[in-house]
Length: 285
Image (cartoon, rainbow, N blue to C red; front, side, top):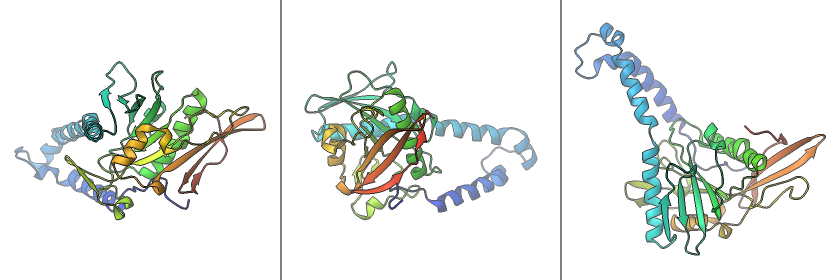
């Protein structure tokens, strides 16, 4: 690969600190707080384990933070007249948001977590969607965003697109960790971070997919769309300081290899192929 799949990278020094702090916490936790227990009784009481489980549960319940971030972004885009309106789709829908664009088109957004998770496979393009966008918000500080992005795009999204004939117009990889010490972003070497409410934002990572589903006989290698074909992504790009040479085009190709149907994924940025899979049997993850 001549360029990383996504510019953000995990901070290996932070990972080392996490491991070291976890070891310290395991052996020194009894010294914290005013529990009144000696070391032996502290660890035997279940207090430590119970506290860890409580913190874990609170950290896992991150959807409200994700929704707060998305609401801040969409409200700002509306204030800038980049979108006409937006609404949460509600619990009865599999997708998360509907955005009305200034030209009257409807963009539907499906929120995902880390792309290497099984939840990435679960989506359905609604009938009313003129544009269907997957937005990944991976708030696991220890995860590798580059490995996760490739796993999500090739192993999961492309397999579902082809296997279930589900068009995904684009992918956004962007959340509150981007550009922080946990996930350094080289984009901030070129542009100043944008201050928006409580957030300090690097420009979003945008991936453009084909507008049609690949098929061996009639459509083996459909081209990715241009940015101006996908109104929501164009608006996001314009409002939050995107650069043309940071856009990534996703090529999805299918072919026969003997008796087997195979698929191939290629990523191209600024005219350069940055990643390509081998021929992969057409089965879903």
